[in-house]
Image 1 (cartoon, one colour):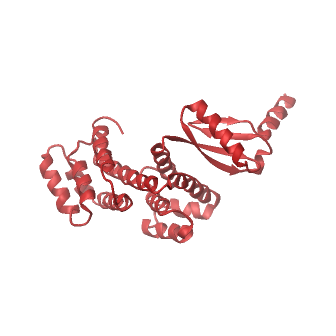
Image 2 (tube, helix red, strand yellow; image 1 turned 135 degrees about the vertical axis):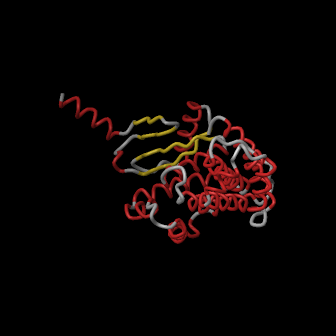
Image 3 (cartoon, one colour; image 1 turned 60 degrees about the vertical axis):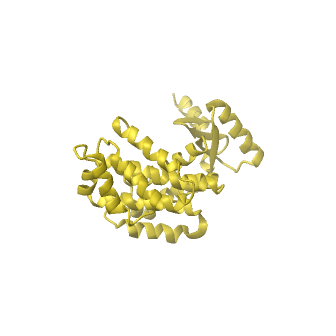
Length: 266
């Protein structure tokens, strides 16, 4: 988010950072506010209309949302309404990120941040591996509530509450596909821990020592702690493939064999 929207977003996120309790509930409430704004474009336009005085916009936000959410959530929505946004959509996107940030902070406080990062990655893999499931969660013609319930039934108590809440929000696919939203939420979680995410593909599982050494080597290279998402992929044959920070290091045997085959073929 750039321009005038970036400053307003910073103010909203700072307000989230000032909240010290009930962050999980706060995240869910902010997602609810975003859903209302998405369904009511006229309200969204009024709340971001620069020709309307800030106190009037704040008053409207309080009138609409105050009775429906906690004081902390109402205050954050008021701050958003008094900000300057390049578009009404930017405000909704900012409040969604505020909800994600609140949930991630709750997971961090509970010592579950690393688990959430891994779970979001695994949920993304699960959806990609099942064509029918992927088509269902990506179908914009289906009600969001129905898709959310499907994931709740599927994931149940297999993941943390934070992961379930973030996955359910990703189904709305407000800023792209379900998978893109899920990846963005995982990046927010990683940023909370000042980490980068690395996808590691190997033919067989790494032991704890190997994982530690790999994480340390990547941390030294990128200057940040690294969260490893390990994928067991028999197609790798041997060696390892690592994707991190937009870079792919492919040291797999399958790739080396393919390169040799091409050279022999001329």
